[in-house]
Length: 236
Image (cartoon, rainbow, N blue to C red; front, side):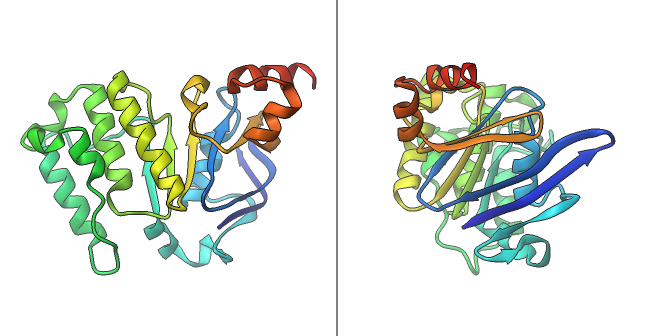
């Protein structure tokens, strides 16, 4: 579905991505992890078309994304910190996004999270009055709203209360089973144990390994993702 080919991105002297290659397939939930500054957010933003690589290419269903911007219609993105016009209400934000994206070529709206998070009771609340957790719920609801084939979720459970976090995790598992590709960047590895099928680990702009969770557990003898990765990194 998404192929990253020898992709490099520099910001001044900083090499954010160093000749990174990876194949990301539908029906997978892929954890994109690594320490701060490892390049994972840069890679996610290159896939989203928000950052243009200096070299290499990224294809979506075989087409170079730089020559086919309409691929973005198939993506849902949840930023780590959502920024919205402060004076608009939640209802106005949802309606604005529906107007911008349009409904002509889309499946019916996916309002599972809007309902599960009780957002209909908050539609008149202004964005500036919302807590960080409620803003995260709006961001999550928007990411899934247009029924995208690919979901890119940046620290999705950060700021969510335990119940909301479980609701979101159940939704991610459901969409993966429906054949969607889900890419999650996260520091909270314990949140990923039940979700992910593959792990991409990055450090200093390099992709150190891309393994299935089953192989990672087998290679390290550890069930928990955090321990498996710690064991693997110690052996390098």
